[in-house]
Length: 510
Ligand code: ME8
Figure 1 (spheres, rainbow, N blue to C red):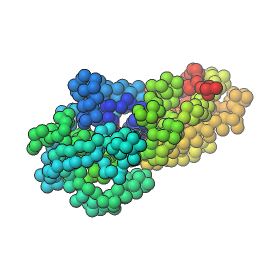
Figure 2: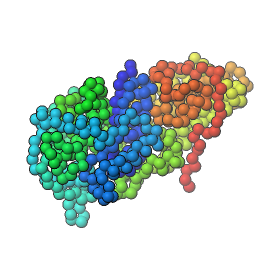
Figure 3: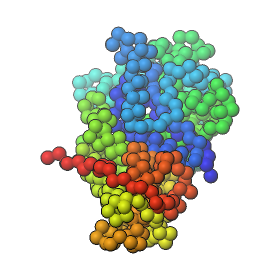
């Protein structure tokens, strides 16, 4: 049954240049959005940029720009990266958008009216790149003898002292535990759920949610001179985008049936603070939080300071948009950490795209040209591949539902391998033209039709081209599942075009 599907990525800090870590989450979300569009769901796919806070204000100052000018320029880099990667978001939200200001003020006012905020002076160690206070125990020792080092950024924290509004997070320990028990699948995978539960059971302290040291943020409506702390501002973007504070009907229609995608670096904010804020505002916590691991380069998380960042454009130049998307969706399973290597990308591209998918299309097109005068025959209703196709569809559908694109694509590629195996077993290129050759080629064309649809969330371009070459009208991503997955949709009698290699083989670097 088609339904609503609301999907989000984190909103990325504008200070960073978009790298393959940001692209990983965003491409995964995009593929899920495309899958759900195939199912006929009303999809709302949200991404954007996180633009307030001290880090942005300081960078702008260093460059002699206003924070707004700086945010405009740097936010555009994310919009451009997502255009390059065929990301089909429905809204690119910026925390500087006026409706977002309204939503932040409305939600925090509600939390205050509900009695969950109080004012106090705060002093502590602050990591500016994290925009977070840390306890001394949370820091690594500083070999230079100065303040401790942030575990994420490896740089010294700074001492901050200010008048702050606090959120009574400590009062939400039990409500959060109750929610985790009531909704055991809300945080996935299970390992990440346990991590979040561990944080809650370890005890929750009240948290400061405003700053007076800067003015680059959303003003606190009831206390001039204060702005909301960037994280509380940022989390609320998910509510802004579906009308919180501006369109109550829309909000009621979409919330809380959201699928948040994020990496484990921001698990605490999403799986502890955000549900608590929503409970405090009298709203339901998010229905789904899907947490993945890190892409590692040389065994380490990518970071500016380690100089090990890889940027999407570098890989797209060599592997194409499809090659880029496919690699991360198929070969970086959602959940655990995974190492990225050039050799790994080349090997996967050549095996799955050039040899399997590309080869199936070019073989079929070549033999149809030679033995069937270029006209594709229809598949057999009782083809041995029909059951394989049904199984592949069922597995792929379940895997997309479970946010496991690598498993979904593995199932889809099994169908390609079986079709190639059928061709190898029957060798239609050696046989005389006739019903037997037609039968095998018809079956293989039907597999190609199915694969174009099932792989379209990952391969936004090659599936459109293959669809056209086998003579079909329209586009694979306009089809509707599950009907379009039924065996026998390739009508036969269509002109099949040979064309060049869909995925030219890439020579591994010497
Ligand atoms: O945290 N591997 O923004 P951010 C996998 N603005 N994913 C990675 C990654 C890596 N090496 N590096 C980054 C923020 N990511 C806040 C979010 S949301 C209300 C506010 C991805 O720019 C991953 O999705 O630091 C991670 O959670 C996110 O980028 C962090 O983005």
